[in-house]
Image (tube, rainbow, N blue to C red; front, side):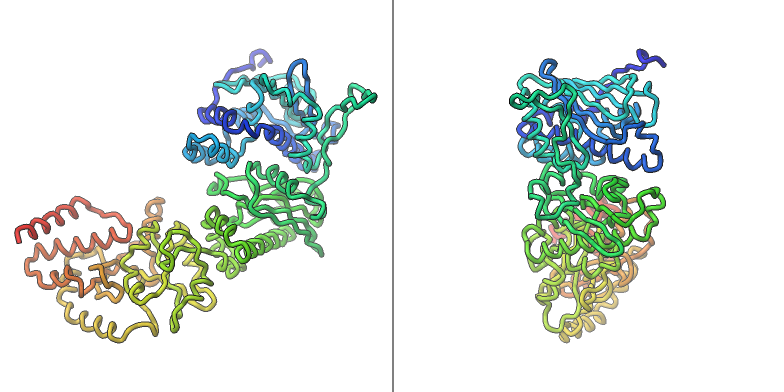
Length: 633
């Protein structure tokens, strides 16, 4: 295939076109960030080459001084950013530039409101990256070649940021990537060398490789045409002392490593010394990234060994329940010339991972204790992820348990702001259990008939309505010696809080209603495992209860909706002997009406816990029949 034959024109994905339009209009007031994004990409490319060259020095092709060059041409109105990093192949260009190769794209666009101010924040959350070039340019040309390939395998990508782009194979003697921005009219400030220097120092001073620009004439000084100077400090920010780093520098470094647009919620900068020495500079974002629930997401914490980039985003660096953490870990103890595969099994790395997780938990504990509003903001974004902690990290289970927050009957709100310590502090005298209920949403939990006896007795119940909650309570079975007890499983156990008169009433009703119980069992058949007089109902006629050690009804529905095989389990059907409908059931002599009323009570119990009926038409038919009977009564 000749160079001429290799040029093709391809259309952007619809999402790319929409994103380009939104960026140009929504981010224009903060347009300087395009330079930060392109420099950050160049820095990442250099990091990748430096790591690969550890095992193959030939990849440097005789040019091991990694750097980024910025050039401006007032005559042609162009700004060029060049790096001598890893570069890209033709397929990689098509994948990374022609499409948005990032999970969460659909959710991102569904979140857009049409309000430019709000949308600019969402675009920042999504990460603007390469496309930010079109904020100031009406045409962008990218030339690249992967290190180690022949000069003839260079690639040129070019687009005006509208509907399509061209892709062609070119001769490119140097490896790395060169991006040329053809600036729009009115963007002359980016053709001014001093302005560019101020932007670089503001946004990219922390970049650990040199950012070079041609020397400017100053007074009578006339620099040579090819004389370059380093614009940034070109030193690893995390290696500096904390008192040498300003908040602005910390925040700009966060935006570099996370490709985020907003400032972080909190940060941790720590040096661990001893036999295993390493430095941590970790951040907690102020919002959840769009790929938070993507199991294949590659973003996360970056590992360096003596300032040489090794890998990013591995679960070997940070537990999955802390996958939202961004930043760097730089080890002085790990071997530099080790493959990633061997590194995955390195015992020192496991100690670093454990130490880093404990540091992050300490940061969260301090926030929860001293900055409650900030912690509540954190919990709103990342609470469901933290709930995975007790499942995944048994060693730190008790620490994580103290960080958990839930909704409860104590507050008439779906806001999750009740800690287990709060709950224990409010427990009634004689109460030895932490009561909770799981449901598919807050309304189903709050209005569950299982709560009726607890409301009457003034006992607080945690309302768990996140999908992860059922898994959480199966691993977190106790807290500070108090057992976590579902109010919708097994026999009701109020311990010393149980009322003797209530017990006696339940026993007497069980005897009096035995014939009714037998008929209900016969009527409902294999839908249920048993029928009992309820000790938990005060207002509702009936409810469904799971076996003590069986799956909750909510868990069953979640597993079924995910297409998983669910063990066959039948609920216990509990009836309230004091409810008029149940009393009527006891008196009903007509077998057909008895059956209809029994099925209606069962279906109502299914609906009250957020479930779905197997046969809605039958439910409506039976209900209409009873209503008609009442009308003729």
